[in-house]
Length: 328
Image (cartoon, rainbow, N blue to C red; front, side, top):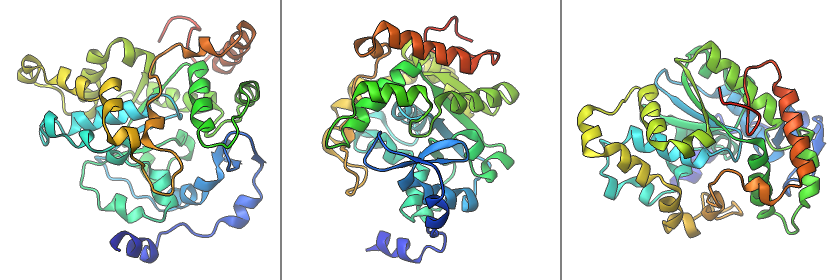
């Protein structure tokens, strides 16, 4: 009964933004729900009231850590890694919360929490909090920016993002969206929380301006060098591994606990649900976890077009994605 009482009495539960939302441009296609263009980005309509409420009411703390991403860029893995790093002294690895909870339960998705009218759950979290949203930097609540909170952002080859999003959304649809249609919409920037290029560029520019506060990662780098990335994460988070931990293999234990195969094998990630009202089970977050699956879905012409769009959108930024040149 307690969660229900909180939801009904929380004074910051999402207000009725229906009139404003109804005026926003909309598109259909990705999921059963509409997406609306809000402040330059396509946002699932179901999350818009919560996002608007969050923008107005969320109060960041100076020691908050925000794990951010465009959807389908390695969010689940990054959440697991940051949570395991932060709590490695608090919990033994053989009795860690990640063994019985999905990473999205350990690091809550702010948009959904606000959309359910349960902002008080975020307030009740002890510090330091690790929180997540898929919002671009420009849409983040002002308190996150004014306190100069630390941000970790992960990006990914747009071709793999598209394929992963297509598979994910088809699990929510009675009939799969044709890949060719999804491809066209993605190239036009119409994808949940898109356009992807503007999303990535906002965080890329912030990471160059404030590297001590914004850590910019690539999913492909995480796959290639998990040991180096985990150490880099711990340093950035302010809890580096000690020489003793290095000798004892603690870094390797974090990597093992958070590995794709380990997380996918857990019962909670096979049949569990983040929310009883959510249509998907937790296994939807663990499909392949690899780079390059786009080659199984795209024609050479599609690859050329999407790479061309990406190159054009990122031109002059100093950033490259996917196979578009050497990494920065």
